[in-house]
Amino acid sequence: MNSFPDPHRPGPHDLWFLPLGGSGEIGMNLNLYGHDGKWLMVDLGISFGDETMPGVDVVMPDPSFIAERRDDLAGLVITHAHEDHLGAVAHLWHQLRCPIYATPFTASVLRAKLIEKNLTGQVVINELPISGRFMAGPFDVELVRMTHSVPEPSALIIRTPLGAVLHTGDWKLDPSPVTGGPTDEAALIRLGNEGALAMVCDSTNATVTGTSGSEAAVRESLVRLFGRYENRIAISCFATNVARLDSIAAAAAANGRNVALVGRSLWRINEAARANGYLRDAAPFLTEHDAGYLPREKAVLICTGSQGEPRSALARIAADDHPEIVLEKGDTVIFSSREIPGNERAIARVQNLLIAQGVEVVTADDAFVHVSGHPAQDELIRMYQWVRPKLAVPIHGEIRHQTEHARIARSCQVPDTIIPENGSIIRLAPGPAEIVGQVQHGRLALDGKRIVPLDAGVMRGRHRMMYNGAAVATLVIDAEGALVTQPQVTVMGLIEGPEAGEILAEVGFAVRKAVEDLPVQSRLDDEAVRQAARIAVRRSFNATQGKKPLTEVHLVRL
Image: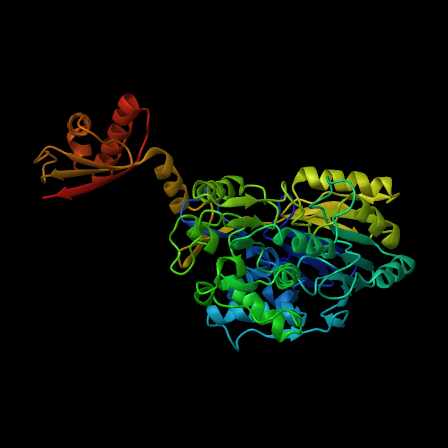
């Protein structure tokens, strides 16, 4: 047993903040608070792969640091039901095995994910009332009702003897929320009067002036917009935006139309919403099969795929690959969402396919069809006026968002700011805030059914193969180290056409020469032969094609 104390174990006089995901980036939120030998985790989310990650759909933070200390993990609190805050729980729970705390709607969404992973009954989910309060180890946690683009978003007041920290989660100040109540301004003002040590706060829209806007205004706009179109309307939004689903249903009803859901994630959210008392005024949604029987002028289709996801309903419809839904010339598709940075090309691809079919595409640049779920500058200022923390810790944003957020905090007379990076232990108390340690952090990829480090050899090899192709050289050598036949080289994603045979023959000769030039003793060493052949293949292709393919050597020794 290691008798040395853990330098990364907080003592009774320590209050630490440690992000392992979600700082310096948007998505993959994983935050830890440390005090008196225990850790409290807030959120455990995912992000999505892009064209630089072939074969990877889901990316998540590496929880190794806290997984190695899971006996000290007091619990995991989920602030709300977005993928970037709870999407990794089902994938990583086996490493953590801790109690989970969530409000009813969030718990419903999480249970559906756990069922898919056959974890039903294994995970302890403690359902909390909105604005509830509970103890997790040495942490006294109070939930504060916020508004966002999903039901039941909660900020957390995390109290310890060293002070109270407000962890905002994702939020906005919606004066007229369509689902749930308004932000609990009184609770935030009480915290400010009590004395807030720090506010760890959403930075997503810190560069945006003004306010984020109200969902009620979007509803009114959609009612007018739907009245302009004579044919079928398809509309895409984030599946978890229950308020938007409600607004679309209301706009459809006002224009004598019926609504169908197209996409599995929409149905999961619909079930969770209705089970928790939301969407009460919306008529039951039709299935995509039933939608095919509606007259064009009576149909509204809510589709997954607002971010251009290749396997989403809207992407399949645009590619004329959906088994139930077809759009025709004169139909309209509304993108009722904003582009998440990095998704621009995928969204444009879907939109171009739709336009080529004669479908009218409407985005937030064309009509008022979306408001953000994150606070703009005026909302951040109001929050700082209420809470008046001694320290501002901007998270949930890229460095440009965090830096602007810190500037706003200073303009609101916040005495101290610190911009966190993933893996940095920040001492919140006692004394001035500062980085007091660094821990292991990174990213994991869901590669098929396996979870692997994003920088693992297999991922690096796949990346190289995507840009440089792959080659396999087959060599047959006798016991004395002599080549029995001419080496054979096959390639993937590298060359084609009439000249391919001649190029491969030249590479084969280069491999033969490299092997035959080896000393006799080296030709008896399988690894030395493989290395010589591998280098010869890469040099030959680099000379003729300007490519260094991922190369494997298949060696048969007789």
